[in-house]
Length: 213
Image 1 (tube, rainbow, N blue to C red):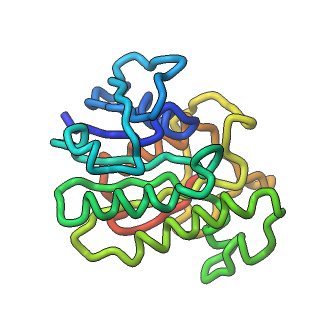
Image 2: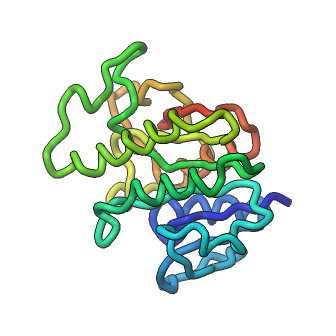
């Protein structure tokens, strides 16, 4: 049974990933700096500081996958990239795979580009969008002995657009996914299905990919 560590496992994306992985029988540990207000059945919770990966060495021990599901908000507004860099340093050269919850704006608008970012992003979303793109760049510059993957959500993704798990999604490669009506959306539970499917299948090694309905 694979051991999966979810950094930010009490947040929106991280919580859904932890729940999906636990429902499939994986050994899941959700790491956060605070006690969760609600607990998911089958998930073990641990307190730790993702800014200090060395302090999580015992938690990481024996992990098959470490998931970074942090958001650059609140007291992490300007520290998110430090977490990504720390995880890269801690896991490079190990047998542990790194999975990263990405952002939509770094995905391509069409094959060959441009990125959604290049088409314009409202000021209030630029910081988080830039964090997602910078995180991807950090991964792409890592040595070959770090096995990573990065999953772009569609344009609409978050607690403000909830939905019910269907188990369905589409993989758009590097191009953002939208449906026949031009809606680019996925609920948290189905994003988690795609994420855990990648953990199981390993179809995108050292690659990014987009998901949506």
